Length: 82
Image 1 (tube, rainbow, N blue to C red):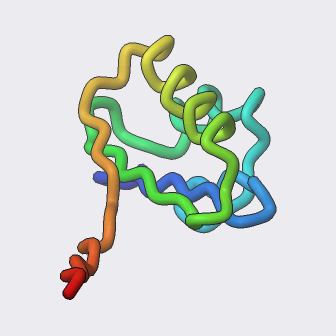
Image 2 (cartoon, rainbow, N blue to C red):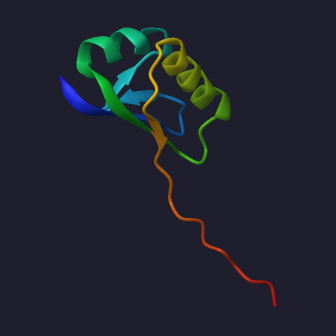
């Protein structure tokens, strides 16, 4: 079992658990069998992914009482208007 998990929602709205595609209805079971209890889960998504899919992932994690959830983000480039 892994010490952490990475969940990605790609631009086709596929859910990938540690780079392996998984259906949302199977996500809970996959996490229970593949990931150690109490590990950190990192979520990232393509900028073209539907927000609703990401929310479904978060809801699934919350229902499973998974608390160590983090978002992987890229820094925003701030532009000044002149």
